[in-house]
Length: 286
Ligand SMILES: Nc1nc2c(ncn2[C@@H]2O[C@H](COP(=O)(O)OP(=O)(O)OP(=O)(O)O)[C@@H](O)[C@H]2O)c(=O)[nH]1
Ligand SMILES: [Mg+2]
Ligand SMILES: [Zn+2]
Image (cartoon, rainbow, N blue to C red; front, side, top):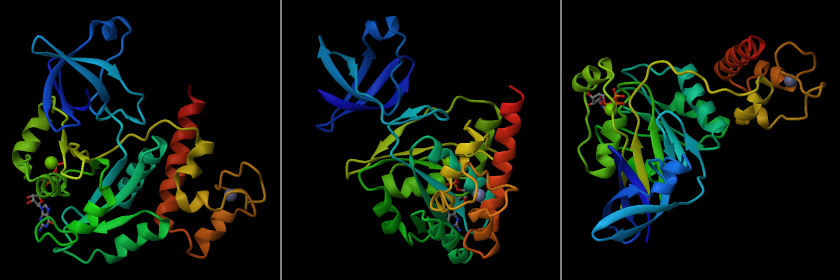
């Protein structure tokens, strides 16, 4: 029987089967011998013997996220708030880059549209080429648009604390997730292991809440490959005078030209430069 691991607790894996059942499973012993650890999100083959479920096969993983550890994520929804907290484009950009590095489709969701106008922020990202939804978890505005972007997919919701990830997921799944600042903050401060769980949607997709974080460590990537994680720079590939142009100080650089005439947003280029320097210094010191 085929299914998907949506939750794991103390060596048990909870598998949602294709016929909508739920089976508690242990991993077959051979996985331990081969040092393979099933992950949340794994598509698996299970068998039930004497009333006990076993994961007996793990299908090849399409993608693998490290923090949180989840397999087969199709899309990362980078959530920001139009206000409260004020949007920080550097943080949004970094999360988008991390999705690109992992080969996962990045999506943008701007929440709390009831508190401030989100048009400008939305346009910044639609112009880059990212599919962007403007929503309000408070009024339900734009929710259909967001649902359209993640239909049938396994989508992880990322974003700094307080932007409304849990509120949106509660609306989407109809299941009560921990929202509001207080309890969340206490558990985070104490390094409580927050369990990761996929929530099934009626369209066959899954959604996943990731706890908020205020700063993010960029994933490792060769500085030279960084531009490929910026769609607006990717489109200009081959247009610079020098092959392998880093778009930092080289003459006749198509990227720098695009920045100066406004086709590439300054804030986006600034994030690129910061990440470039960061990656370069990291490799130099290795
Ligand atoms: N006005 C308004 N408030 C919202 C909206 N969405 C969420 N909130 C409020 O914002 C606060 C934070 O929402 P959460 O859903 O807990 O935010 P979160 O992203 O899950 O935060 P962490 O779990 O800390 O990462 C709560 O008080 C929500 O009620 C919205 O669209 N409009
Ligand atoms: Mg939350
Ligand atoms: Zn260049």
